[in-house]
Length: 349
Image (cartoon, rainbow, N blue to C red; front, side, top):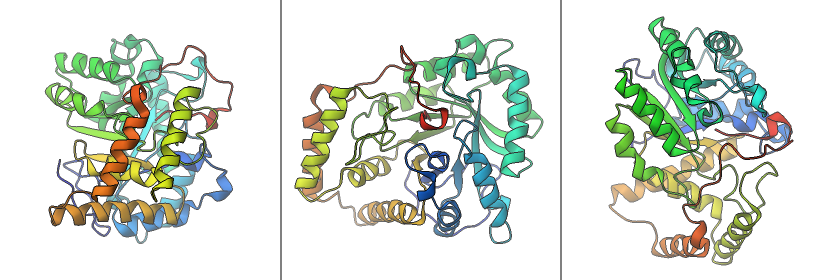
């Protein structure tokens, strides 16, 4: 999957999912990583469209994210009509606790209709069954499972692409295999925190997903849900204390050598061309511009057939050495015990 330059806003393909390399994640609109007062959705979305980002990922689970995104896109419709971008959302998860999951066909259909109303659109480009590892697999692929209803909605023209999202790669792959055996392969799969500085296991699974007919693959959260930052991750983050401590050491090492671990992490994920796009949570104009600047820097290197700066490469290698046994370590999902944090403050992708 070659890296393509971002181009100024124009109609997107209706026959293929030609998503920009950076996909705008709207989790921050719900206040998951920062106070909502620090978000500037209108400026962020309009600047993203102006600079060539053509897809937005949201969910009813992400607080008011759908409403906010829908209002912003509606206000920009004269300049950027619906045909100029893709909208991706999710069904099945509506809160933090077990009882907040509803994978019934009835609720899936209702959820799609509700999302369309909130997003002010007649159709959705992609709908994922959200965090599939939290429910019994029969609720996903069984005769009354959620995927059957989503494929019905696709046939009706309400959805263009049907997919799943979640954390454990083996579960995602198992569902992809079952759908392939049933001659109804998934269109798209989104994995998160599995191609980043701390974990690159997704690279081993790409050929496997493709062998089961999955057309499109998304890599979400290059910062691993704010783990790979100079500040501590949110309280709800599943990383154990020891991993948090190791990442803090990595961030300090990077800073001591003139680098920011978040910038290194985003570059690391964007430089990989194993998936169709990388979903990055963005909340304001500055973050949009910084992400695109990093991507353009990578493109410039590719054009000149240059690798990353040698010092930068050494820093990344040393960071991964510091991680030791925590490199490619995966947390348990779903967790044995679920945090009591407010719903909008605890987010899987």
